[in-house]
Length: 107
Image (cartoon, rainbow, N blue to C red; front, side, top):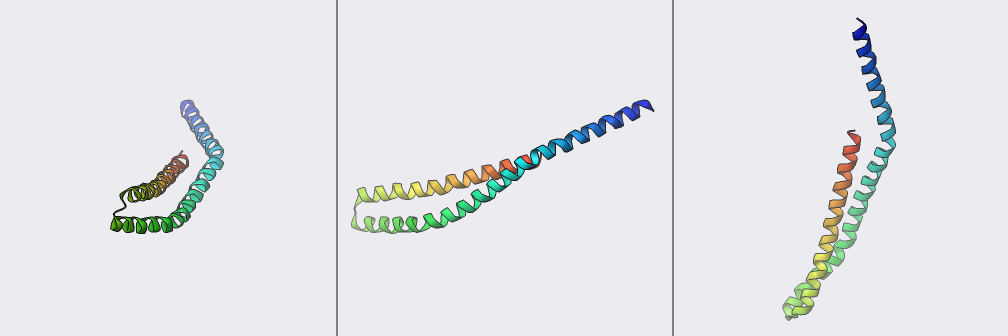
């Protein structure tokens, strides 16, 4: 009978400690969730902003191919690839922050 009472007290202490831990982690989770949301919105906006220069660079690249200006085509190809890498890096960062926010929420 006494052992059952002690086990019940220990379980309650563990549950209380878990609740305190969650209350301590909650503001940090809110911060990471807010950061993930802001990064997602920023990525969406920057993708729209980068889309027009990428389209222009692509059109200029087609024109330089037609004119057989190989050096200019190479420069434009590198610029287009750089824009693509910027968007891809943004996606990777947003996904990492969302994963981290989910991990903190599961603690």
